Each structure stands twice: as C-alpha cells, then as structure tokens.
Image (cartoon, rainbow, N blue to C red; front, top):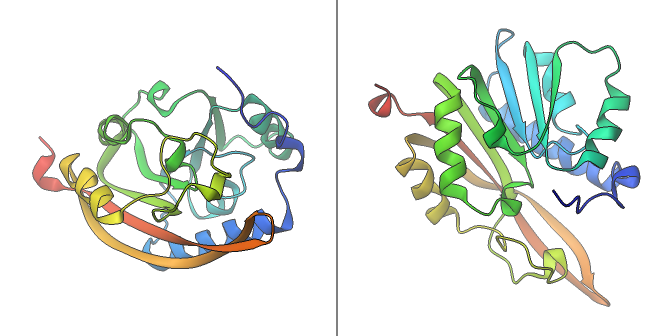
Length: 206
C-alpha cells in the first residue's frame, strides 16, 4: 500500500488544518447529538484532528487511515488511551456491526468506489446509525493541484442519491465553509465545503 502522505505527516497538524477541522466538528455538532454509549468510526482519520475532538462525547472510536505515517503521528498523541482503536488499512477491513456513528472530513474524495464504501458502511453500522461526511463540492481539480485523485469534489445531489441507494436517509446537506487557497501561483480559488448527514433507513433494515 503506497503511503501518499508519508512526507507530509510530520507537519500535517498546521494551524490551517486544525482550524478547518474545528469548523467541521462545530458544524457536525449542530446536527448530531453525540451519545456517551456510542462507538464511532472515522474514515481517513489522518493524525486524529477530527476524531480526537469527537471522542469526549462518545464511548470509543476507531480511527482508520491508509497512511502508516499519519497514524504514527496519531499514536504519539494517544499513548495509554484505551478508548481509541487504530486501524491501518481500508474501511473494508473493519468487519463488526457495532458502529453507531461514521464520520469523515475531507477524505471521501480519495475513495475510488463510493458505492462499495457506502454498502460496507451499511453493513458495519447499528440500526439507528448516523453518517456524517464533510468534503468539497465539485471543483476543477486545482484543489489537489491537478494531481490524479478519484474525485474532484462531489455533486451533492448525486452523492445523496448514492447514499439513498445504499439504504440511508438524508437528513441535511449544506455548504458550511469556504476554503480559499492559492493552488496556482498568483491565483486564489474558493472551494465550498459541504456537510452531508444521513441516518440508516429503517425501511432497508431486515
């Protein structure tokens, strides 16, 4: 498994990224009432900037990431923390149906097969589970400096349909933040961040 973040992990926790994750968590908490008995799973946890903010409101969290280097930084933050499980690999590597909350911030656009991922999320979540995704709306590819990634942001109408087809009810989809970045020298671009909140649809639960 190639570690595309190996050379960036040590300096990942910049003030800019810390602020971005704080804005996401604040928005998440506007729509989700965390429960102290919940077990959560974060897809693409990186160094834990989001997951460790969520942890105080729940019982435990599984922090998944494909980057060994990012997770090495995370491990140094949680020495002795028994309520955090680190999963180095894909979300598909988690097999137990005991997750009450799944969340992901700025990682979904790195997932090649969204439909496969949503199907797996449905399989590992409890009956009333909540799913929260924060990412960017469709852009021209400049956000990642035109590097080849699976998705140049998302059309949220299409993404919502994918969630519904996988057995989830959409609760809210809205733009919650604007990122302004100089991705091309001398040119500043705005990227809309959206939040999508969904719940497991009882109609699809057998």
